[in-house]
Image 1 (cartoon, rainbow, N blue to C red):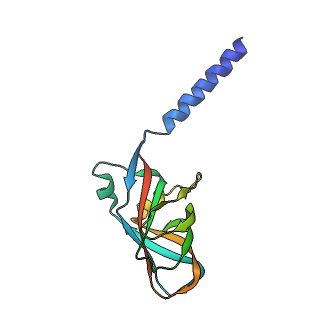
Image 2 (cartoon, one colour; image 1 turned 45 degrees about the vertical axis):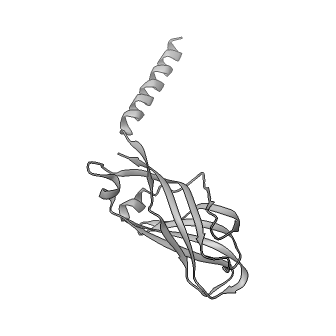
Amino acid sequence: MHKYTSILFLAVLLFVGLAGCTGSSTTEPLDTPELQLTAEGPLYGGANSSTATWEFDLVQLLGEGKKEISEARITSVEVLLVGVDSLPAMEKMVFEVTSKNTPMTRIGLYEGKIIPGQPFILTIADVQENLAAAFADGKMTFVGDFDLIDEEYNGNIAFTLKVKFDLGIK
């Protein structure tokens, strides 16, 4: 009996010690403004890339008195193909993000047809890199790789993009 009590006491002590070292943090949602994701023509059948850059001031995003972002995770990505019905047929989108100090990281996937004027929501990866360093950079680049079904399109293609984050703030 004494042996089990000692083990239980050590386990509780270890838990309390670990909990005390983690510090307190809060989780806050953050939405990007509506961004323009663009692909410049000519575009060819198969995979093509569209990009959008978001520059921001961390103090303006978090407000005065906030310390630092310890964790950042994308929770939602909504994309809308802008244009008329004369755009080429498209499908699928692989969505990635990068910044100065963050390698290109795959975030989400859409596997249906992309239709002008109809927003689509990407399936977000369960496991993501921590994007806290990207917030410290003050600038992120989002990349949407989509498949062009037609053989060639000489114009530009534009999407609107909204990204939602959960931020762990210390």
